[in-house]
Amino acid sequence: MKCFRCQNQDPRLFTFDQGVYYCRKCIMFSRIDANTPIKKVTLTRKKISIQPHLKYELTPKQKEASTKVCQFLQEGKDVFLYACTGAGKTEITLESICLYLSQGKKVGFAISRRQVVLEIKERLQKIFPSLQIVAVTQGYTDIWDGDLIVCTMHQLYRYPYAFDLLIMDEVDAFPYIGNDVLKEIANGSCIGQKLFLSATPDESLLKNVEIVTLFQRPHGHPLLIPKVICLPIFLQFIVLLYYLKKWKNKQSLIFVPTIQDTYTLHFLLSFFISNKAIHSQITQKDKIIEEFHQKKFQCLISTTLLERGITIPNVCVLVFKGNHSVFNVSSLIQIFGRVGRSFLDPIGKGVILCDTQNESIKNCIRQLKQMNVNA
Image 1: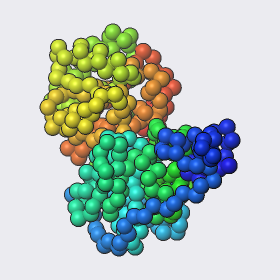
Image 2 (image 1 turned 120 degrees about the vertical axis):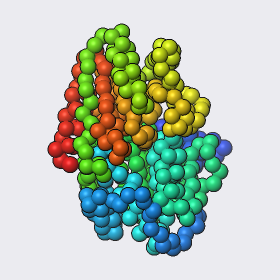
Image 3 (image 1 turned 180 degrees about the vertical axis):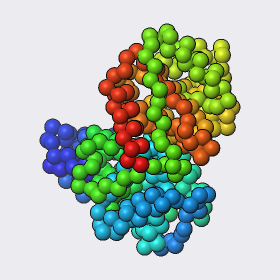
Image 4 (image 1 turned 180 degrees about the horizontal axis):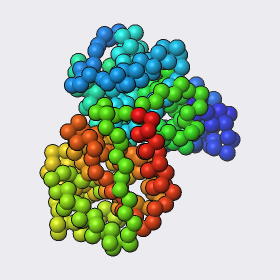
């Protein structure tokens, strides 16, 4: 027996029901019977000649990376774009998107997290105002075909054999990394080439692909190396408050390890600074993020939910309880990648508050310094 969606062949993961066996490994995406071929989804295809509308011209290094990516894809090779946070990974994909659309091919842009899907969709819509760009994510839209499709990794199950170019962002992040079902669904949705994007790739992701690197941000300034302060937890709060007061003319993102920590800090900081808390179980996440963009409050307290994708100009970042196990190397690099992205504030400020400086913190500092050396 075999499941043609997730490639499961383990007999223990099939169940017999009403005369047929079905796969339990990918049942969350809908039931599929064993040995039943997946039908190719029918999507609209048309040749679209288009050029991106950008506020700023790409830098020489961005152009070089964009050209390399496009050349490898044209040669029929999968590509991994290994670029630091804020290097303009999305902008580097634009040349390839335009090429595939001009040939009447279908392009998909898959991302791990729902909030980032919505943000990337809006960015791409501004860059390509004449395109019909659809965001496909649970609870957001019933429209799932367009000139360019942006979706979560989970929603790729809707698109068997659909994409000539599948761009996959945050491939090192939950829920894609280590998820064999999502990997097979992604593979099954792509009949052409895949373009992987990440600032923190797992070694396993760099196999059998062409690697293009870019460690310089468009403004040319180095990545922030966060200041590390080791203190007992009760003193961490005092220092946290000190920095928030010091940075009162800017907005701040505070990252905490647990949902309970978001509530605790929200309550304590409410006596001093306007703030809101956000985590995966809050229902009005989009509204809170939009209000933060509109500067309706100074400080946003978040779990690792917002470690990727969110871009706030002139934001400062603090990590509370930074030696907690939830803050691994990739997480910390992504968190401090929120800082210094703006041309108006290219340096930025960031602090890690912790009991002790563990290996994740040390490796984060080491990798950021190495990216600056290789920029």
